[in-house]
Image (cartoon, rainbow, N blue to C red; front, side):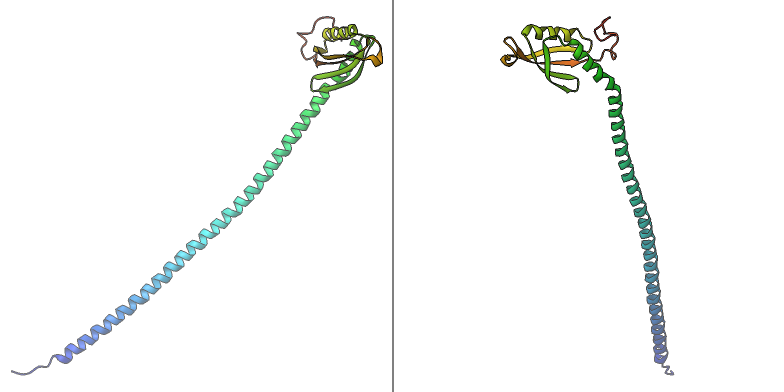
Length: 195
């Protein structure tokens, strides 16, 4: 039998397989690196795109916040203007009222009585005055009670005032201002305020 040496062939085959393995390994590494670079590029592009969107949204949010602040400021100014207009309208509406109240104070004041001070708080009037006698104070209260412009007269104190005379009295009273033109159905006919 002839001797055939197959060792060189096997050795060559091994060398070829090693070379093929190394080529496939290098190609796999290169492909993996390229895939990693591509994935990194795609992720970075997505991050950049999202950051651009976030920046756009933040810009719009800041603009809307500024507009909301302006709207709130305008609403505050509007409320202030409406409050001022209401005060002015109330003053315009009640301007003749105070003139009528002063006129009625003079009309209801009996002889022998004079006021030392008058204070008004909303619709309440506080009177401090001096009368020649207690009868004059009673007369003043009756006059105020009959008036269309005053209601609920209330005597809070009466003290002797010898500086103004023997029977003189210092008094303090309150009354409510009423507006007969605001409630014409409740106004009695021929009141003292009518001319």
